[in-house]
Image 1 (spheres, rainbow, N blue to C red):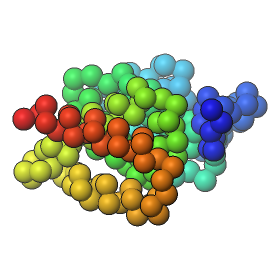
Image 2 (image 1 turned 30 degrees about the vertical axis):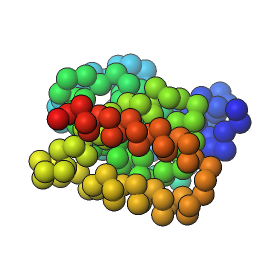
Image 3 (image 1 turned 90 degrees about the vertical axis):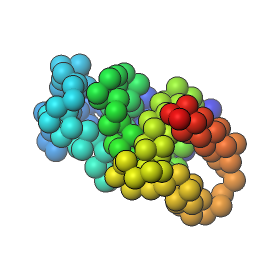
Length: 172
């Protein structure tokens, strides 16, 4: 399948090298890329997550790198770190909805992790135990508005929402 966007996996070696050598790239991001950053439930990790999920980067290669690294974390997060992934996942997802959805079309595992973490946050948000920025209903409305009712992702979104809803039910 041909993707409409640039992701880390479909960048050329030259584009990847240029991104990794960017003077704007924080040292912690480089350390994470080379598996030399110790992820934990501590301030350095939270600062790194803030950096990775900050507003969309204008440089396509850096955006792809940050998305790639965040996805690596969301796939491996456990225990205390897993508890905060929904709050960071919503940021990176909502910053460019169609970018994330396009990626989900070729990576069900990543989509499932986002859905699980978001479902957990939506569950706690229902009764005020979370500072999550959206209710599940508001989240769906925002996606619909952002996609301007385009049907390209209807099937994918149906599955995504179902996984989120199932996670919310399991939390009961």
